Length: 626
Ligand code: ADP
Ligand code: MG
Image (cartoon, rainbow, N blue to C red):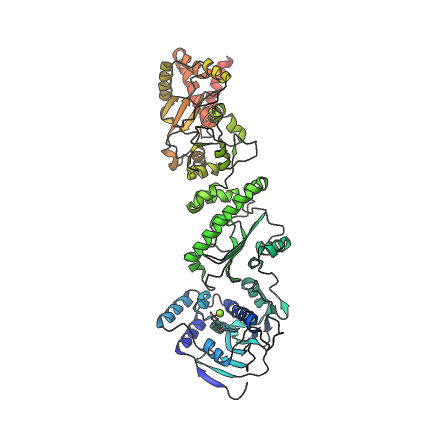
């Protein structure tokens, strides 16, 4: 330092800012390192920029980097960059005044914000002052890229600062902080490394702590896709996803307008939620120009995409936006929408390109897509295209999309059908699919409990209603291509006379009482004697089963109003016999009617009273055996 140090007062507002910053909560004090390293990176970026046009000669060979020295004995932290530097006038203008302040409102807002979230300080363009959160005194030695004389700015944060000539400097800026007693941590290499890893790993210049480069992973998402090798992607995935293997899919995209977004997303191979590790944290981090804003961000993607790993970077975001304000930031919402839609589209295309690979994805992560389809109305229609189900047209274990189902729909078929069951075999042998088989109409098998919720939530696909086959009001399209043999078979099956059907139904309803709303002759059953159908159509049998099981086996209040009918098959041998017995042996006929009801309930996957059923069943067996 030379003798002619000039002492200057901070601009009044700057003094207040300092006051606020120094006395604000220290919960996130680490962020001062991020602020200073970001400033250093900005300065390097600016130098890179001028050197393109100006071809500076002074210190032209000095490498572009950030160097951090920790003196744990003297408790001094030094951050040096070889960036654009500052002249004396710039030191004064940039560090002594607050350019865009002007009003008391600015200060009031800053004070309010600092109380709530120190993280936000940089938003006000006052990031530099955060150095005083940890430092007693701050020295800024700087020399401009133009080679003019170097200067030192010095302050203890108390109202004034000095600027003096400083010789022997290279291009760039050195910030020397004498740490406060309670901030000695920041004189430790270990602490600084940790903070750099957390916030500044992807700074596009080497950051060296005690001579060792600590930001070894490159921010590859900012590079052109064509220039990035597969191994580089994998390497990056391992870093960002804490992974040891390769990702299943990767999606890298860049957009300039309407928003500047770079996103690099990975689908991992495994779903750790499914192996019982509990609910995952989101795996995508949010950056602004390679500086971390929000780790494991809850805001940048919808919750159901929490299985993704990767980064989203947008230059349009303010660097120092806080977590709370990310939540209701309109820009973040826009970015989220763009990325989510693009990602869904990407998966749709991947599914078309390699259906088998997609099926692997579906097995592992389909549950998240279903979660989205039932919980996130915004993307429901798009997500429907990603859904996969087994159906009567697929082989066991193979799946179809709803789109493919539509492409196979018969002429005259206006609706899409599904039926649930615990397994493919159970569904195929149950009463509900008989007419579908007979009429050769495809029916989707919803074999996972959540599937019924998904399809009933969707309601429609491609403007076609999605209907559960256990609905009472189902009307199947006529079979237009019946063979002569089938027509003959239909004619040959003798049904009960209509009058007998009517009286039998009435009697059965009396026997079953409140258990059913109505007993009706069926136009859908082929072989089975009876089936249970839901009236109202909102809650399918599967949904009722799930809701009941959540309610410890008792009927769930949500399903109480869900009325059921029993349809009986007037061509079934058993039904005909019951009609006969009703006249000859009323009591036994009643037992049979109740047993038929219980059997139909079992086939619908619904609750019955097993004790009562088994006792009755033994009575029936005894009678037959005797
Ligand atoms: P912001 O970065 O938002 O502009 P800061 O308070 O962090 O606000 O910094 C104020 C100004 O000081 C910067 O805009 C920049 O012009 C200057 N500055 C800070 N650090 C450096 C540095 N390491 N090299 C050159 N200029 C710097
Ligand atoms: Mg800054």
